[in-house]
Image (cartoon, rainbow, N blue to C red; front, side, top):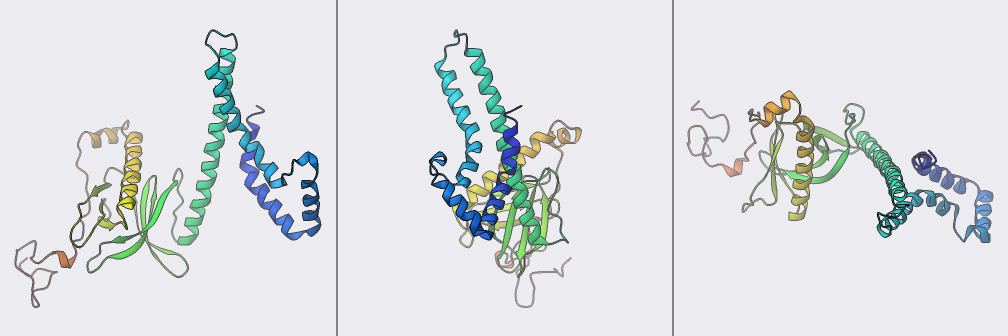
Length: 279
């Protein structure tokens, strides 16, 4: 029970640090007092902020110490099971602390993103957490356009930057209709990833090979996690057994086509690339 109290301490540490910094900024007397306490031999020359972080660092140190003890203790030793139980206990607390820290950090990131879109768009969703974001080019009808692309564990968002935030273009759920493909480079476009879904399909251009690989790895991880969570359901089994998924078509840029895909007639000044008159 005593070790579990570390979780509450960790959760409140950031708030306590903020209060400390604000108090030091607003009160010279308080700051002078802290400076004088730092010179006290009992403080070891550490600031109050440094002392506040020490309990958070203690649990990982306990785990490392106990793990080393376990490695050095023969299984025949009478203390082996006790040390083993201590490792399990401290590891459980450390994992909970780490999970709470990640959940708190994710909540802060999600709130930051939500503020960028305003109150008219809801980005927050139970169980949703942030994965990565980057400005990528999206192949559009006439020319490539930059969009702010955000990946979450259950959705992909792309948005247009405005003066005071972002305008949401599309939010695509990562489900059985969501796919992505590593496209080969062309003379006019490199580092391409094709995204297909039931709502919208398009091609993204990453700024580098490294960026492309990072996105592919992150997308793969999110899709695998979705499948692993759904494969035990009836709908999930039907999908995994080969039920065909619906995907919206990918828009082809004007410059990439010289003939109509319906009638094969070549485009010209008088024959436009859209609205074929032969159909």
